[in-house]
Structure formats: C-alpha cells, structure tokens
Amino acid sequence: MPVETIDTVEELRAQIAAWRKAGDKIALVPTMGALHAGHLMLVEAAQAKAERVVVSIFVNPSQFGPNEDFSRYPRRQEEDLAALEKLGVPLVFAPSVAEMYPQGFATTIGVDGPALGLETDFRPNFFRGVATVVAKLLIAALPDFATFGEKDYQQMQVVRRMVADLAIPTTILPVATMREPDGLALSSRNLYLGAEERQTAPLLYRVLTETASALRAGMAPAETLQAANARLSEAGFRVDYVALCDAESLERLQELPEAPARLLAAAWLGTTRLIDNIAV
Ligand code: PAF
Image (cartoon, rainbow, N blue to C red):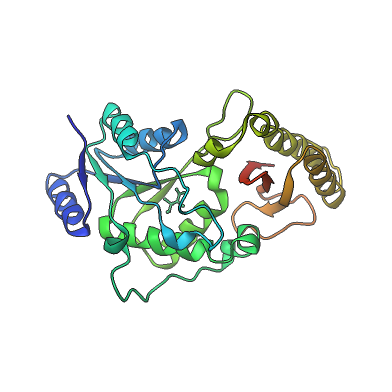
C-alpha cells in the first residue's frame, strides 16, 4: 500500500479519528526526515505497540539557532517516503512551516528541569523549539505512544518531562541508539562529515565507553571527564561538553551515584556537531 502523505492538522485529526473509531491504537514517530536506520528502528518500535503508525516529517525552524544548519539540513522526502512505504507505514504528516507556525504565531513552550545546561549552554533556544513543535504534534495527533531515540537523550528527557507536566495522554517510548559497526551513533548530520572526519568520529563513542568504565571502576569523575575532554581535543574535536549527569533530571554529578547516571557529550569535527551518550 502506498504511504499517504498529508500536510494539514485537520487531515491528520480526521484520519486519526477514523482509526480510533475502529478501535486501533496510534503511535507517532516525530522526525525531521533524512531518515536513516535509526529512524526506522523508531518506526519498528512504534509498530510493535500500535496498529497505526504516523511518521511526521518537519524540519522545525524554531529549534535551529541563527547560525545553525536549518537551510542545509538534508531534505530527502522521496527517499524517506520509499523507506516508510517498505515498512508498511500508512501515513506521513509533512506540514509546511505556515501550517505549524501560522501568521501571528506567538505561543511557545518554555522548559526548565532537564532542559537546563548541556545542549542549552550552547543552543539556548533549542529545547523551546523542540518542546513547542513536539507539543503541537502531540496535541494534533493525541497518539497513544510516541517514540524518541536515546541518541538525543536530553531531548527525550525534556519531552518526557513536558508530557508529564502538561498531562498529555501519550506514553513516550525510548528507543536505543543505533550505531555504525565502528560505534558512531547514526545521525542525519553524519552526512556532513568529510572522509577524514568520518574516520575520527567513532572516537566520541569509544571515549564515552572507556570513560564510563573508568567511572565504574571508581576513578574520580572530575579528572576522568577532563581526561576524556583532552583525548577528544587531541584527536581534533572541539568539545562543547563531556558531562556526568543524573539519568532522569540531568543534573550534573560530582560523584557516581547509586541511582542511574548518564554520560553525555557534544563535540565538533570541523563544521559538524556530534552528540552521543551512554548509561554509566
Ligand atoms: O529529533 C528530532 O528529529 C527533532 O528534534 C524532533 C523531535 C522531530 C522535533 O523537531
């Protein structure tokens, strides 16, 4: 069956209402397109939970800073639709910017808690943009489930917090990060990496895994994180952060706690910014 593409909230609501009437559960997979195998895992996780899966494809301008890659962000709708059709996805919601941000748009979602620090230190408006568009998508579709990748761990925690705080009746399903055989986390932005940068990129994950092992072995967090930062810098990364945080609140930790912790990093290779994280 060909995948149906719609571009208005009205059409989305009508389709979902029909599915609900038939007693089906609905899952939403929010994406910005340029789909890779990691996105397809989000779709499969959604399909495992719900009879009907909607994938949204929308490169959301409000989550990009003025000097970020909004205009060069990869857009590949034809390939995306072909991949989704293969997986049997029945519906893609691909709205225009005007549909999501109509003339006079003046309402945004402010997020604190897990949104503070880390990405926000470098991309101050990022989570306001993400939270606003995700809230709009969830309110439009009111799905039973929505899948989010652990690759964007802080984003996932911000969305979970927002959904709880606003009592949005959707269960957020986390999906593990998918990696290349050399460990590099799949990301649409990997397309920007030059050949040499692509060779260096897997070091980010290697350093995270070795740092997590060192922390588990009892090494002091401050020195261990500093050593991780130095190793990445020596290899040619420009490091934004390597941080040890509480896995839920994302508050920075000085000691390895009993409670689950997460090691998160963001670093540049040339003009490409990579992020990754692992459980400690
Ligand atoms: O992770 C992404 O692709 C985006 O941040 C999201 C969740 C689709 C919101 O635009």
